[in-house]
Image 1: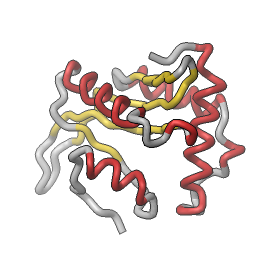
Image 2: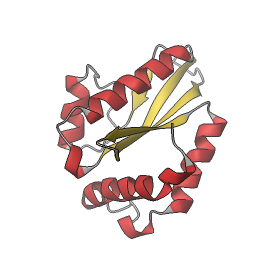
Image 3: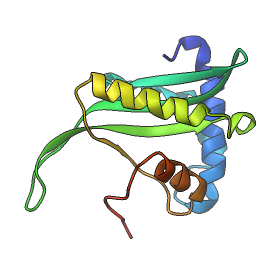
Length: 149
């Protein structure tokens, strides 16, 4: 679980993700605008949704993090049945630790936390141009449910 001493490392990871995704979506904030205030927003969202920020360590260093919200609800309307679900809001692996199993471990930890919270569905969103993330989640068994154009 996230600890206050992790702020700088997690902000660094959030900036790495933003630097990767910013060229794919010009409406995203530039990486240098992501800082402790953004992390505090994520922490507040976690408190409001029974969520948590999970930290992965490798060789004594933070290698990645994931933000999981467990108590989300989509109300029913027309064709959709109301349901509760968990959401992986962010999953980031430090560039130096990619392809070492860190992402898989974080995703498994998110799935375990969601199950423990009584959720049998996990949602996530991926930018269409983020092919590496799309491939990662597909290999992990996720399938597209909605495509927004």
